[in-house]
Image 1 (cartoon, rainbow, N blue to C red):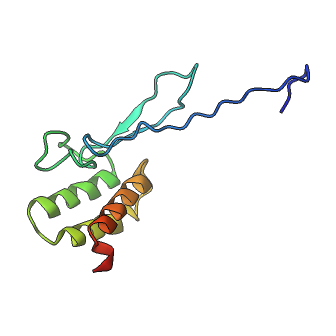
Image 2: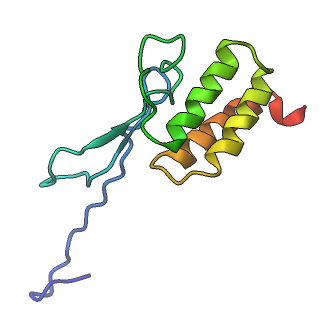
Length: 123
């Protein structure tokens, strides 16, 4: 691509990689990222994330959306040993499949990968 002086236009692409659901509550940027952009705003979950929610130091309170409600149900399932880990994970995936909140696909994929790592998919 060239500008009106026939000089190449340098395009910069920014990928939002500030997603941390391992040692924190999941958070997802809701605004643009990059030079000249305002500081991004984030959607921060109360129950989605390995260090977040029931029985954890972070999160808690009222779920912020339908996906967070799914994560609360998942947390309760695991914390109170209501079902096997694999069954709790599958219930979370089924629940999140019915949502379209920011980060829901990322959260579902993370749970799926944990299922594969723990051989749930082979049960």
